Image (cartoon, rainbow, N blue to C red; front, side):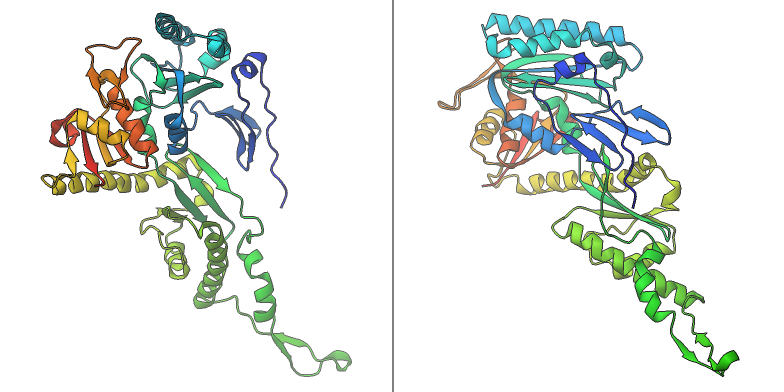
Length: 431
């Protein structure tokens, strides 16, 4: 199989200057990923995706980081107004700078990052290629931006940990899943999240039906025996075909799918992610007959996958996966309600903050449309609630979410009226 031609990617000096910690390139079959920008080749055109990928792994890396200081900036961006984007970012950067100065937190360790943030203001191509929201994180040796399909309330936070609350709805509603696109001409396996679709390279897997059965058919289809003598005393070969008739065509497809299932099982033997089939209606039941993968979804994407682009394929698959995520949240709320009165639930924020620090929370429900500013001393357990944000405090809801995530718990972000007991936070304890 010929290797795909990867597009050449050029970076100007401003972009290189932003990447304080160079991120490794990862070659993909459908493009090149450098940091968080993805270029896709479509025919002879090259397009840049305006959305950066952000998933649970990114979230946990940010949550686990604890430095003094950590700067988090969130803002809504306009896809068509680069100047307005720059002005909004300049104002938020100025606010963060004033908070650093107020607490004397700006030191030589943050000098390069703040300089990079100011240089970012002059990077016009960056501001011209935005999605709906921008998140920026700066810390000791960290300078990371995410352009995301989620508008944010403008916010700048300087604390001893990153402020991740605005990103929780995006990341925690994520789920890894796979798409197996089946046709008689080719087969493709895709690894996906809510935001990303990436083709899995199944090296050595049969490319199509003929490739899968070429050795088997050589033995099965080309059986022959000799008949009457022909010219020159040689007896002509009489072939018994096995490629005609509906039953035989079905048998060939099933054998083809058995070969595919072996490869899929090899790749996904340690996976527990949903697998969605894409193919014409008569093929999907045949593959289900032979599949050994336990989380093969009953519903599939009907139609010829060869006629669907990856974006459309991904969207159709996500529409099938999304209800499973909502069900997981509904099940968690049901468990909370069933446990009320047993000592394993709480809607008291002080108890929740303390319990999160001790790793006691298994599931946390939290209001994403509010903040609770204050301070928490993990040594003494003392909690202070403040009326407004200042340079000395942090969002205690964010603190509870970070502590829950880093200690292996689950976090569900919702509107306050959807939180159990109509509280700003509710927790289901492990013990």
